[in-house]
Image 1 (cartoon, rainbow, N blue to C red):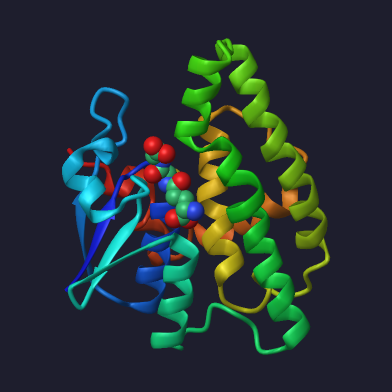
Image 2: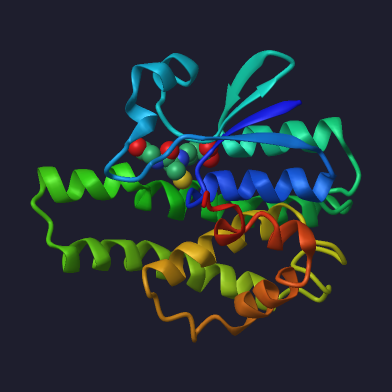
Length: 212
Ligand SMILES: N[C@@H](CCC(=O)N[C@@H](CS)C(=O)NCC(=O)O)C(=O)O
């Protein structure tokens, strides 16, 4: 069985949980707590598993792998159905670009270790950290809303959810956690509402997997 080193609130783990569920691939979740009082990702034991000291890590056939987007690519190549990417080459490129806007441009700037660095090395106040967080979400979501409004399909790039929704939904969850006003993004919220009707998304949600 595939083992996922997982944290309920991690949006990179959330992406992967959705992806496993959509493909119908079973996995066993092993918690690595990123809670500030625990910081298990920094332990020697976890560092031996993932030298980058981040989640997710995944063990497949006894081999450890990291990086949610690489793992989602592996899932798509290994289990082609249901497809995460549309068939049309331009639509495929757009779906990947949409996902990368989250995975490469929004999320890395707002990761917990980045916020901790701002607080500790730049003595940033909670207000300043909040403004930093909001800035990168808003710049990213402004662009994603434009792309989402151009969609003519049920989901962003087809009749079923794929790579774009897998990345978008966890980022919306994070934005809500930081109380960002999402009223300028009706199309993104429409996609969120559609995904909320799909079991694979519901069962992957942080509150659904949060340890008791
Ligand atoms: N690019 C990586 C990002 C992984 C990542 O940043 N994970 C965060 C949680 S969402 C983490 O482990 N943060 C803890 C830390 O940086 O100390 C991926 O997509 O897997």
